[in-house]
Amino acid sequence: MRKLRTIEMNRLSLEEFKQSRKMPLIVVLDDVRSLHNVGSVFRSSDAFRVKSIYLCGITATPPNAEIHKTALGAEDSVDWQYFPTTEEAIEQLKANGYYVYSVEQVEGSTKLQTLSQQVAPITSEQTSEKRYAVVLGNEVKGVKQSVVDLSDNCLEIPQFGTKHSLNVSVTAGIVIWEFAHALLLE
Image (cartoon, rainbow, N blue to C red):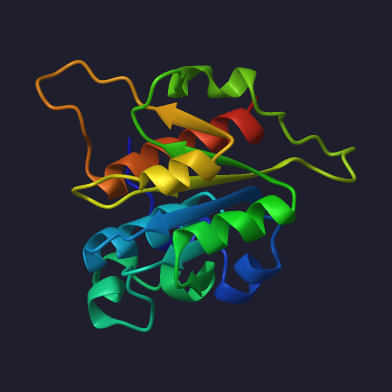
């Protein structure tokens, strides 16, 4: 095996990325305080062509040197919007036909490994597609209960160790991958 050189990876230009078809997923950050976490979510969202990121509440917005440090320019490729509250973002998403999942440990949550049984894969014949949003919460408090209450469902990543939480940027990568697997790779 030989590592690929950057030129061999066929990466999209910024313009090609902007024009490309996006996965019908919006990632919502609910009061995420770490700028490095925000940057990492941008980078993961770029990797899987997430439609947009909604930055809510105390979540910082680009341009920001600390976000750029982990985003590595993905803050320029992935569309984003800012909302003063996550509740406002969720209300807009639902009004636009999005099915909203919060990533949180709640009674009756959907285990992430069963997501592909709930979402419809995108086919080339589709003229309209189902649209989804995932809400990721604050590093300490998680997703606010008021946001969970507005959500259509909650996703939970099963965990088997002594800790019952993952870093929000790690969670974002896992959840975005699972949506990509369910929507694009089935």
